[in-house]
Length: 113
Length: 315
Image 1 (cartoon, rainbow over the protein chains, first blue to last red):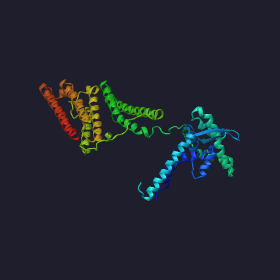
Image 2: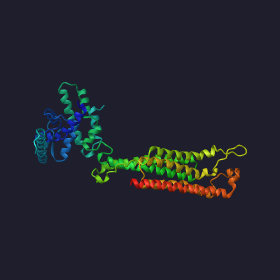
Image 3: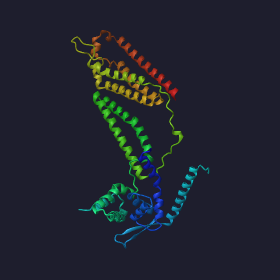
């Protein structure tokens, strides 16, 4: 039986890139840090807070997210939203993810491409 | 007293670039309060919730590094192998070389053998530390300043040859080292424990004691350099042309001073010459000199042929 450590490492590797995809999808509707964290966890994308918060800022700097401060509530919150560029990148990422899934299925079923 | 959250924010923001500090502070404080509320809403008490949330966010420096996209390593995988290669290359010969030179210089300046050898070793050690520090510092700076520096990519041309079958056995090296150490030990031995005694029963050194303030330390240093050379030779595993050249240079560094001192009549202890009538004869002393010269030449030529043939075969 493979040790838990090895398994965890491989799962982490597999999941790493999907957090960006999931965030870009989720932020088609504007959301703030903690709410996004909750939503991703609820949908089966458990992500560490100390990974997600800096990631949001990085995606914003890359122009994939736009942001807006909402000061109407009890405390000021920064709402992020997927930008047009973000949408373009997201479509490419989703296409690639589907391609990976398709290739994998092909490989599993032994069908030659 | 400030709250844990305040302290956590201060610790994180300290390491975040100034222009974005305010904004990150407001957002991070909001996120932390959201997380705490999430927990208290589930029935936890506020103090425990705060502790757990901050523990979950982890080391503030790490979080700040993620915000600033900063590297958490001194030298990363891009430069590590270059760093290691350069460091190994420099450490393989520079400290030994400088140490030997300093030792020889001290000996030539008239310091005693102990002082000369000690200063040689201390210098070698200092040089090694300096090299390690500066090389690492430069690479650590490069890692942070320009991560896209173009270093030559690896190609198959850099593949080393599969090491040839060892030309030299451990016995071979051990014998050479033993001979060198024996010769080096002979020099102080003949001074303190000479088997020749004068009429009063006092021991007479074989070599002129005056030489301890000039050439004998140098000869000892050359012999010790020979030991280092043998170790390097074993490490390399086969004769190469540079090794052949160094071997010849070491041979000459020992034999030339000895022969020259003999020719100048400065090698043997005058007291010893006085003790033996045979040595007082000019012709006999010349015979010794001639024998020494022939021996030196034979050793040099033999070493050159032996190592040269092996280097040619290996190359």
